[in-house]
Image 1 (cartoon, rainbow, N blue to C red):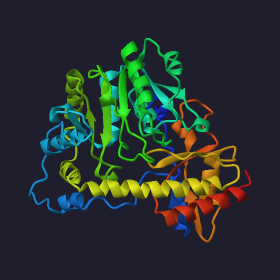
Image 2: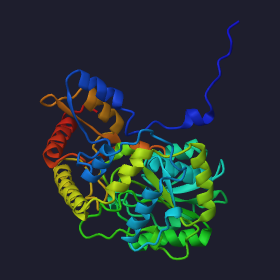
Image 3: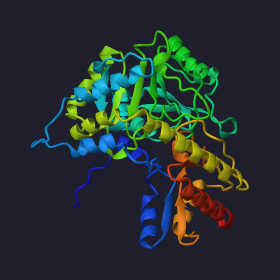
Image 4: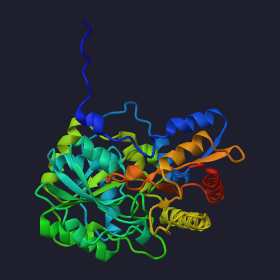
Length: 400
């Protein structure tokens, strides 16, 4: 008699596939067949990493690559504290927990503050891994819908209030927004602060793209909110700031000592974040100010190119994002995922095609975002123009 095989956990079954990466097999097959693909699906910049960071990797000559402290190397934590002073925020090095990318910061924050079955409110659409890590932590994401028609501004305060229950632990959001590129005003961040005070909630603030704000818009950190030291948790990463996605160095920053102690214990369980990458990341913060100034200028040009090109495509609804390096576009198709797959399997223009991220995976509300895609403007302007030309041709030819 055959033995019964063990099955997966409910958590293992429920955790969603990444809408950013799950179409990769189609892309790999297309490349194997000789197609050139413009990757608009993933936030992998083509901008050079700071020389200071690369030089730090090259200058590492220790004979043993040893464990580091569970909460991160002092040199990197001090670099983060110095960095925050430039934003008029006083952060002590021991208020920083270094993580393996910003992803681990999200997971640590949820595990330290939520029990299974607890809830977090999230403006929707949202960075897809909020849902993945919440599922892994057995936490329920409660979406608060925003809309492309009004540029994905923060939903009204009442939309949050009516979704708060006895299980609500906090509000998780990105500012500037991924996937939307929205930048919340000081008044909108203030609304989130009011909700946290009035209902005793945490604010899980993903501020990874804070440098990338255009047209004179002002970034407002949750650290500027008053009387919320115990409730503010900032999630951060060097990946996008320094075009260093492969370094996998992030951090969780909070003044809540009890929370820091809990996160440290999670950190001890995984031993330590990457050692050499932290040394390199600390060096990146010593890059001249002109590095980020030039990067911001370049992304601003790309954003304008993308918006102008998308605006010329019949049936496409898009807005000009104020921050980050993404936008969400509504397409004249019934199912953006089927269209994205078709582009990879069936469509070529001069031997080229494009890869986009279907936005349905950035929503928790079933049926939302089916006709939308996230586009990352991480290609140079020449390639970006060509990519949108191909996208437009694909839309015109698409039988669906």
